[in-house]
Structure formats: structure tokens, C-alpha cells
Image (cartoon, rainbow, N blue to C red; front, side, top):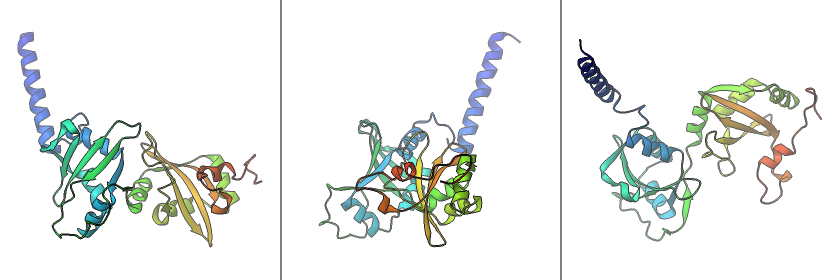
Length: 251
């Protein structure tokens, strides 16, 4: 068989394999596809909406969980989008929304706009120039962290021991914990940081968890006391004031 014919057969086989993979997986897992690139950008951006549009969302029973499920599993409808102005229509079986990308800042921002209003919601008096952040639902983030391998370094095990905590207590935060989104860094790349509050025996603890590609890393744990923070101080200050571990002894 000549070289030219071999190349011809190879190209035909590669084309057929590519088409078969596309139709079987519907393009998912192919990060280079335009729709998947758009979705990935939205996933790693800060998602905001005007207070008026948030009113429309709530009135029409469109929850944050439904929106993030749409971003996770939806499809970009380029025929209804305006890529030139970075406005994209995304839909799944039950929901269709419009997302406006703003990539000018260091942290990409996505604005949910053009909310459908089939229920004729009375949101006209709500300001459309004030914006609010739409965070992922607490349970959705905890479930994602729970499904990753838990990583705890020896020094952090010592911190846990100093507070009378153990690895089982850490596992419970992924079921019962409260993420303090306003103080966390959910859009940090490549590793988002979450501050998770959890109570044991009427004592509140704050866990610093970093999300990796395959692991949830417990970085620190402290006794959570807001009174130890001055006005405007970040939660990370509490960790700086935390117990100093030396040779696994508590101080």
C-alpha cells in the first residue's frame, strides 16, 4: 500500500472516530469546542445579577441550584447568542438564560440578564443598577469537596488534636458545614479556597479548605470567634492568630 493511500485511510478513520465521539458524548469533555470554552469561562467567573433580575429569578422559582446546574450541564445556543458582545444563551431541558461575560478585569465576571418573566412579577420598583453575587448553593459545593480525596498534613492533624477534633469531625463539615462565601475565595484559580464553619459541642470551629484537582486539602482549623477580628479584617487573620504548633504540642 502506498504512503498516500495510508494517509488517506488514516484521515478517514480519524474523521469517523472524531464524529462518533462527538455524537456519543455530545461534545462533552472536548474543552477546545467553543461551547465548552464559554461554559468553562463562566464556571470560573464571579456570577452576579442585578437586584431587579434577582427578583425576577425568585418570583419565577429559578433557584441558584438550577442556574448552576444549567451552567454545569447546559448547552450554548450560538444561534441565539451574540458572541461579538460576549452575550451567550445557555439552555437545558427546563431552563434557558442569557449570560453576559466581562473579561476586562483580572477576575472574569458574568452577568445574568434578560430574565424571562412569565409570572408577570412585580419587580419594577427593585433597582436594576445594584448588583449582587450569586454564589453556588452551599450543599453543591460541600458535595463536590466531599467527593474529592481528603488531604490533611501532619501539622494540621496536630491542630485538630489540640481542639479535640479528628478526621471524622472533618468529614462532617462536608455534610453539615456552612461556607462563609463572602469571606471565601470561590473563584480563585487554580485552587478555590473555602472557609467552612461547623459546630461541635456548642463550640464553633472554622476550617480552611482548599479545592484541588483531585483533593480537598485541609489547610488550617481554628476556634471561630468573630470578636477576635477587628472591623474589616479578613478571616485569614484568625488563622494567623491560631495555635502555634511545635513538635505537635499545643500552645
